Image 1: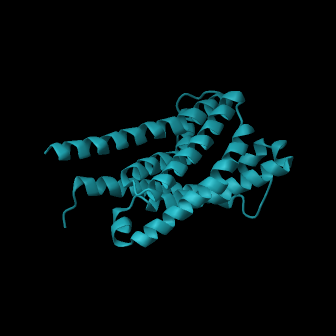
Image 2 (image 1 turned 90 degrees about the vertical axis):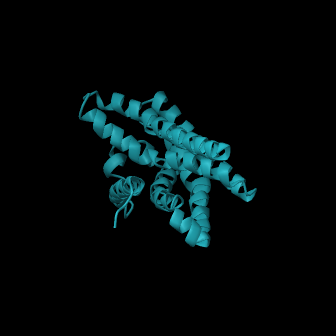
Image 3 (image 1 turned 45 degrees about the horizontal axis):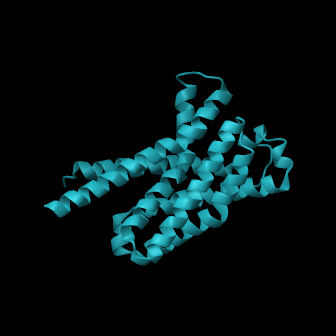
Length: 217
């Protein structure tokens, strides 16, 4: 059986996503059971003493991994066409978790972000855009505007993936430029989600262009 280049491209994308999701699961497992003295929290000795930060941090950590997983299934054509109800339910879980848990808790964490005002502003903008794009995706599907719903879901999931891209860019910069750790963190706090939005924009534009060309033909 011969597979097309498009098939292999999608296969590699999902394989990479599965690998990085696995790494994110390993990171999440570090905080089970709840421990205030492991991994990232080592740098947040003062903040972790605040009850609202504790709640926000663990809410964000425990829900975001499910957002990452359920969001990935939203872009499966097989699931959408052959199991539309499952696609719908997964989408509801994705949207519900972001709007009520992941994005609000991410905003609170962003207020206390490492790297000073630059990183804090970046993470807060990220949380607000994440909430906004996800809410718009929900409102558009309620109106049966499938194209706009898809576009806003692409933007929403691009920001969901910033959890991965931030760490990936951090690893690349740390092993190439060897900047001071906090300088690296400030850079990736912006690069991690702006890069993803740029890619999402290209994808949306290419889909619109394809639809336009098909109509002309």
